[in-house]
Every structure is written in structure tokens, then in C-alpha cells.
Image 1: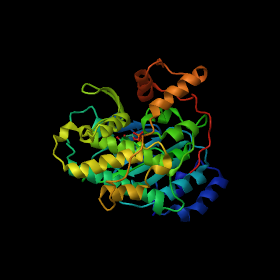
Image 2: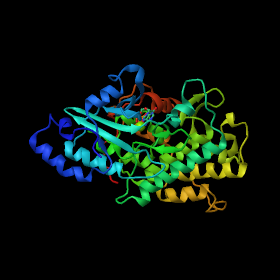
Image 3: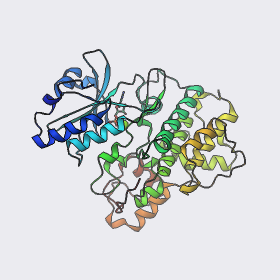
Image 4: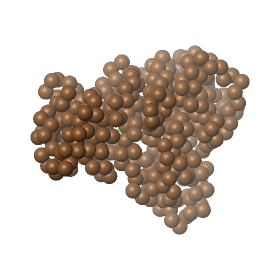
Length: 382
Ligand SMILES: Nc1ncnc2c1ncn2[C@@H]1O[C@H](COP(=O)(O)OP(=O)(O)O)[C@@H](O)[C@H]1O
Ligand SMILES: [Mg+2]
């Protein structure tokens, strides 16, 4: 159902564009069209107290529609290369992908240069906020909630990868893209969005620079993107959820650490449980937790073909497939790759941190990695 006077939303478009979009209207499925005025009212003029986040695509505001529905309004600040109708078609096809663990785009506003996406508001914000947010923790994620979140993410991704035709590679799996609704059901968000806003210089943009720790090494090197790159990012995310630690960070207990490397060390020392979030105070079933930790390590293996598909990862976690005998091979460590790359391409690489030691390299990855760097191959495939 169209939410506003459709043509009033398009007054600034050319006649040709209007007829193009009108043709696409039949395919728009359940995506509502909002006017800028409606969203301006819903967010009280995009007032800063209503701003709930800022991401790589723009700012996100909390809003209330006239019918009382609470929404998250994402004002896109990046330019997409598509025309209006193409953009609408992409949004519509994304919104037609339905699954309990996928965040649905509720509606869109395209007016003049405004491009705004509207989502249902998620009461419990994002996993990043709850796990790593600076605010005093009001929510403690116990083991059962974490387990269900991990399984939910795996099911949502399996749906994108294996049940959607043609399949969708998420491209940007990270803790802030896992939204949590009122009962902590995980909703994977922003799938396919990066495809709408391809980086014009390289496949690694400023947008993803801060989240380099999630990136599969083969993707970081060559730009070759497959479902298995998503599986790698899922593995990193799983390790974060279980350990309560960010992929690359400074920590009083561990010093500066790289989570994937730590997990691998602990696995080899037969100490995998040590990785678990201390705030859980050991209140979890060891066998189940070890299974989840091993899935994390299986997903980040260096060789993409050895990483499980998402449906298999989910089945291992829920104990439908036994992996006790499966050998886990060494993980792809992006820190090592960065060092090699930085050393070999020093001249074309710009970063404001020194690159001589491993730990310095890691700091540059987590905080100050610069975008237009060594990555020149732009062969994104999905
Ligand atoms: N539907 C939503 N409900 C509640 N909060 C949201 C929603 N969508 C996004 N947010 C918040 O806005 C922030 C920015 O989101 P986004 O623009 O997608 O950037 P990123 O995913 O890079 O953090 C998120 O981290 C989250 O805290
Ligand atoms: Mg996001």
C-alpha cells in the first residue's frame, strides 16, 4: 500500500523518470513511499536528540509516524549511481526478502536529492551497542540470549545465501548491523546495501575501513567477494559475541589483541573456553559453548572452501551435525596480510600510523586505516 500521495513525492523528477517509476510500482511489493514532509514530521525536523546513530551510509533518526509506529529513519548521505527507478527496484527486491532474522526495509523516500530508508525501530538497538557500547550496561546478555542471537544470525544469513534466488552476499556483516528487537531476536540489517553504493576508487572504502577486522583476507587482497567472505565475517562476529570483545582492541587483561589470533592460540593450547566473556562468570554449558567457539574458528579458516556454508554452521551450532572429529585449520589473519601489503607497497599506502611492528599494524587497522590504499583490484563478484 502506498503511504502518501505517490506523485507528490516525485514532483521534482522528470516526466521520463516518473513513468519509469510508475512502471516499477507493481514490483514495489510492500515498500511504502514516504514524503520528505512525513519523515521530517516523524523525526521532529531531524532534530539531533532524535539521532540514534551514524553509519557509513549516513545518519539514523528515531521517528514516530502519524499512526504511532516507531521507525528508524536512515538519511543516506552517499551517492548511489542508480537512477530513481533503478534505486527503487533494488530497494523493493531487498524488501521482498523476508525472514524472521532479517531486518526489513519498511519504506523509502526519494524526493529531489533526498534518499531516505525507513525501518521498524528496534528497541534494543544493535549488538555493537549492547556488547561494546560505552554506556553503563543495563542489559546483560546471558548465554541463552547469546546462543539464540548467534543462531538467528546464522539462519538469517543462510536465508540470504541459500534460499534467496539469486543469492545475496551481505558484504558488511558486523556487530552494528545486527539489530535486536524487544525480545532480543536478532535482525541482520543492511544486506546488499553496499552493492547500491559501490566504492568508486577501490572495493575497500572509508566506510568499511573501520571494520577491516571482519573482512575475509581474500576479499581484502583481491576484491573477490563470495558467500564465503560473509562466512568469514560471521565467524569473527561469533567470536565477538562469545567473548564479549571487539575483534581488534586494547584490553587491560589481554593487552592489545586480535581476537581471531587469540582464539586460535587458545584452541591450540586446549584452552578455548578461556575466550568466553568473563561477565558470564562461567554460567554456560561448556560442551555447547565449545561447539560455538569451534564454529567461529571453522568460519574464519584461511582457505575459503574449508569454511562451512551458513546452513551447515547453524546445524553444527544446534548439534544436528557432529564436528568433534573435524580438524580446524589455521585462520586467515588479516593482520599478517596487512603487514605484507604495507611493507611491499609502502609508497602507495597512506596511513597515519607507523607500520614497523605487528601491533602498530593492528592499531592502524582498527582505528586509522586509510581507504585509498593498496587495494586496486576492483573485481567484485557475487
Ligand atoms: N532499525 C533500527 N532500530 C534502532 N536503531 C537502529 C536501526 N537501524 C540503525 N540503528 C542504529 O543506528 C546506527 C547506525 O546505523 P547504520 O547507518 O546502519 O550504520 P552502521 O551499521 O555502520 O552502524 C546503528 O549502529 C544502530 O545503533
Ligand atoms: Mg547498519
